[in-house]
Length: 135
Image (cartoon, rainbow, N blue to C red; front, side, top):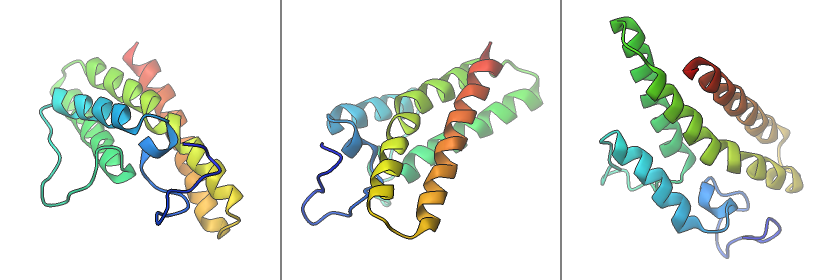
């Protein structure tokens, strides 16, 4: 999808990663493969799509919770860190910068631009941390 185009009837800055990557179905399938690898499945009640930012953040929360649990139990968390690193690289670190650019063009409330800018910085730093900590 061209960054200058808006889906008819949709929000000017959707929070679905697939709308920023070209092949949305491929991006959603990739995310679902990550979730399923950890035996996670999308909630039928919530009905949120796999590329929505809340779904992706919930998955990162799961990975970091499992990482902390592994450290407390004295087991190696490196596979969880690699999953976090790879998920961030293939999803949030890939599309959130495009969201920020689109949001900036909208000349909207600066709070939202700052919030997305903070999130983008956090994702990049978290990916670097996961890559370094995984070894």
